Length: 143
Image (tube, rainbow, N blue to C red; front, side, top):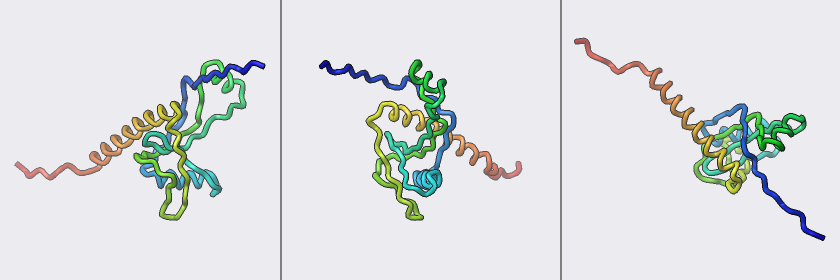
């Protein structure tokens, strides 16, 4: 009996409808715990980014067609935080312990991490700009 041919067909495009950035991985861990209703949960890590994702279900003809015919995958939301160094567990001050899975070997997750780093940089730049605008101008003595 002949062996079957195995074909790897990576996703060509990932479409994310909403992104939620957390300032710390501890905040992301709290969110993961709440979103899971207190049940055991985990978060993913790739190349300096910790994240959760919520895919759109492949239950409609449209989402299945998009994936099979066009290689396009849809996620409803990605929640993330920067986490430069991988750690197996994140523990919050409330003693919530959330396992972290290193998924860096997946090319899609590596590409996602790079895109999310860009998003984080944009959020952080916007935040700094907002802080600068909120501060009063330095004192200028009258002439």
